[in-house]
Image 1 (tube, rainbow, N blue to C red):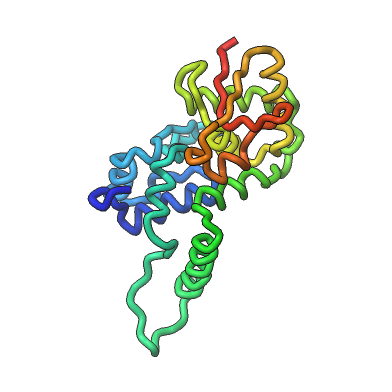
Image 2: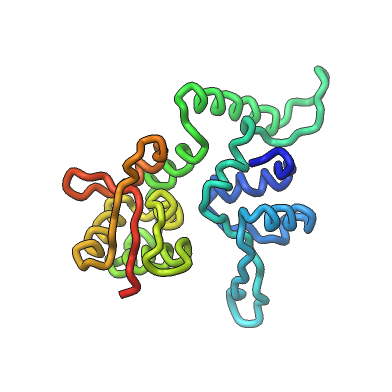
Length: 225
């Protein structure tokens, strides 16, 4: 992200929460100044959800957009939580300790050549759903894929990276997503293709690839029907 559009610590904290938790964030939890900052940077979408239960009002949430600008915004400097200046006599705080952990994580990522996107996407892809969602039927997984695809692509048969699609799907096991993608390909509804130039691929793209035969595909296009 360019220096003139660098996020404030509060806005970056909200973005980090969205990235690492994979959850939505009620906009009421952010001051309006920081809400406007995230929306202006085009890093989040403002969505409205119906209230749960009779008479419950709808609520507005921020949902993370999946595109490279998000990673740029949170990777432009080492991971750190804003904290007030400390003195030698100041009481030890949880934030201070967590920042020491984050410094070590940042150093490890630099040493291994990892971007924050690599860490987050790998965690998402290896996660497993709990409760009823773990028993999703095959048709439900398929529908989740189609819904997530159109949310990212905005129109049918538009190129979408599998890394972005898998991240949008959350914790659905990779093998189940792969099975559904293969069925869509067999039906001639899905067209997969690789990113041939290795300079244009990231570790996340390689991890998210769909293997058909001996070819690793990193992007897909899906027809409406």
